[in-house]
Length: 155
Image (cartoon, rainbow, N blue to C red; front, side):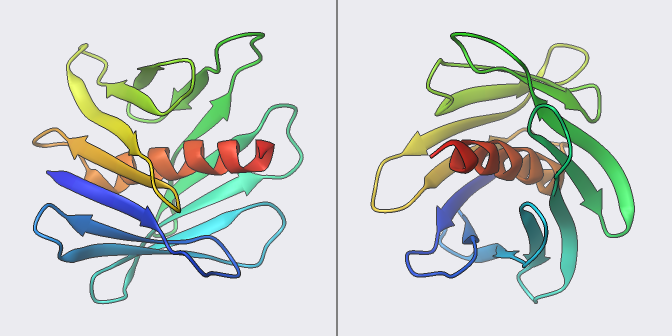
């Protein structure tokens, strides 16, 4: 499944639209007022399907991932000097990417590819997410949102 993740140009809080390869809206992401970043993912009908919540009091930036009310994992930026790195505590996944964090891959515990992410340049943040068959697209989207949120905190 291919998802195109686009930040809205004018928005008070972070907000994004997520389209399939045919241009149909699959998800919307709305920033909410909270301590730290809190982003709610809604399906095309507007029903909530996930939340990405930044932990405010943590040494390194950490985001928790929720499917409804259920905690599904977290992603934390690792302390490194040159190359940004993230630790994913979700589904046994791990991440590898380039030093700019714009293109990366998410791997399953078996080593197979769960998703690839590449940034397209434009007026706002825009990513193409290719999710492997059988992988939960919402959880993959939450990981991308968390990494984007951490990068936004540095800008």
